[in-house]
Amino acid sequence: MTSLYFPGGTPVYAKCISALSSPNLTTDERQDEILQCLGSTLDETMSGVNTFYLIYAASLVFYMQAGFAMLCAGSVRLKNVQNTMMKNLLDACGASLGYYSVGFAFAWGSSNLPGQQSTVDSSSTSFIGTTNFFLTETDEKAFFLFQYAFAATSATVVVGTLAERCQMVAYLCYSVFLTSFVYPVVVRSIWNTEGFLSSHNDDNSISDVGVGVIDFSGGLVVHVTGGLTALIAAYILGPRKGRFVEVDGKWKCRDFPGHSVALKVLGTLI
Image (tube, rainbow, N blue to C red; front, side, top):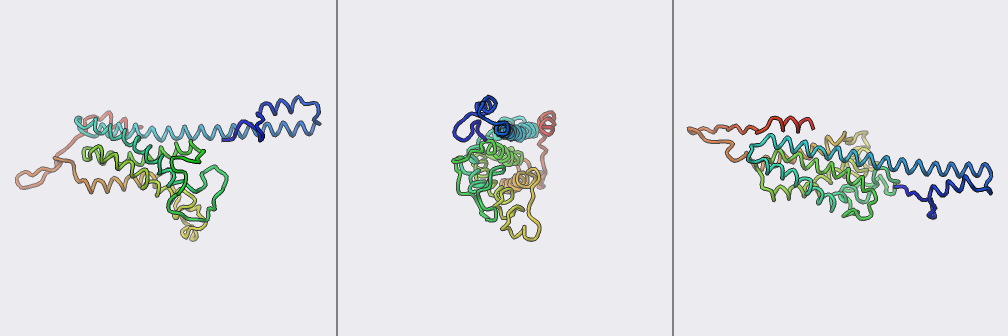
């Protein structure tokens, strides 16, 4: 963020007061000083508004965790509600550990963050980032929070598929691995200007033919990543225990209705 100080450590308000009260300045010089004060104030205001908007947007995205938790809780049998709610909590915890430690670095390290002055050549292509692990040398903490909320959402998409199927420790390991490596690689490929699928990468062979991936609101990066992970997990784990029973030599499907329609509707609306 822009500091409240001019170069040299002079506070903005002190500089403005000096410009208004100094008798040694001509009218033109006084006007220039006042304009500099106003410009610095506006820069600081815009920086604060942008930071607030990022935090507010991150809170809205993270609020989806509550929606997923209610939907999953209402869709499982009563005896499994506590287990399902704990898995939703583990998503947020595991995602914070994975994305904070290496996930953010793999996705955005060694590149220009949105809104920052360009310091890295956007014509290069890289698979993962190699800097900013554990948020070292990262000033954009609000941007990290915003990206973490999306990473946690991508992991939570899978929780409904694994309901009543997966043990707690295995689920925590999955959550950390998805947010520390799988999801960041997808982010790097599409959202980052150095991604090989990004339409903003000048060195991208896909961009050369006038195409490239433009993700809309995380529909591909977040939800497709989580959805494909859920599909693979469901295939590996198979159906829930007791879902199919053999009766007179024929396999029949047992109905496992959710215990609360109200929670399912609440989760869907959130």
